[in-house]
Image (tube, rainbow, N blue to C red; front, side, top):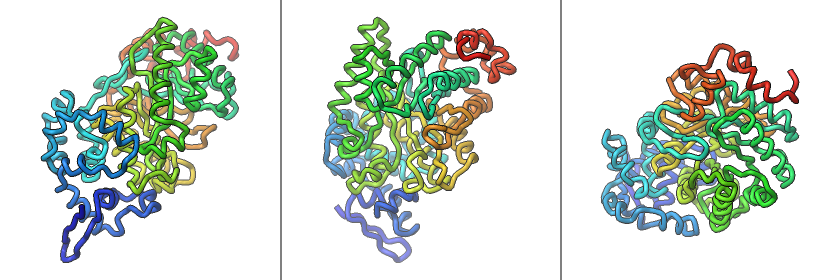
Length: 465
């Protein structure tokens, strides 16, 4: 299937959908590295024009890669609803998405008719304002120990990483985040060690903090999923099962995971919840993704990184996760080179995830060797908050001292909430009010310093003054 157009006397030919998708993508250093990016701005514009006229039926009938991810996506989609959109072009779908009545259609099941390839296609012809406006009304709610994603809420994951997995240091970081009203999304630690014993100790420590303060939230130690399951088998309390995932079978294998193994792991966690007597529903998975992961594993199969990312969301959707997190700027400048590319990718990822029905969050971040700065995170944080993002990160001082990258801090997230009138998850907000950290939805004077929350800090005498 060849695509062709003439633009101001110059003819552009695209050999197949895969090439058309790559050429139509916004500039990304990863696509340039992979040799799939447009070779000029004129070619990019030509590809977008052609893509806008491609029918959704053509995309559905011509998968760009054949593997177990494609098979999963095909099994998971709503074929009957899909027939109602087959005749639309990508451009017509964009107009439908931006119309006021789309949210009703989406809520009635349209999200299951849209495949990741379709989501990627329409994203490529949308501007930044389109991505924000289209995402904002698409609310995806999930529940575990609290409820995430309701209209008017903006969650925060406390990320209390420590370079030596020191329990006291981790605990202090958690308390710091709680005192800024953060932690409703979860308390999620990236361990410095993937040792089972260390993961068990950390999981018990996080659970102990939550139990001692009474906060209605969930915990997760982001070791490899096999390590988490080994810890579960030795008595660790597992709220959420974490795994990084990608959009191709080969990418997932590079992460040491298969789709069948994820199914088995999810069942183990569900059974664990039933056994310990606090079964709280089916949302027990936490996934992380990021544009460029497939290319970094040499597993992209000729697809551009946006298309690969959309397919990762197709994987996530089938597991009914509690949260999905695009770690947008973490992978480095080889894939997203600067502020412009990071911000575009963050908006793209959030929109595609929401369009596919996922509870999307974003780690608004960058590595220290990329062309970005605090203004990058400030701008993308506010754009995503306006777009209805389910949650962002809360990192002490915005500087992750274990992973060595820059993210959003507790006060960044709290500031975004106050600026836009957003609230924590309702159950978590009630707890914050009860311990004096919030009053009528706003941080109390001195809440971040703990001066109004001495009873909360008093639960940890071992930490000293």
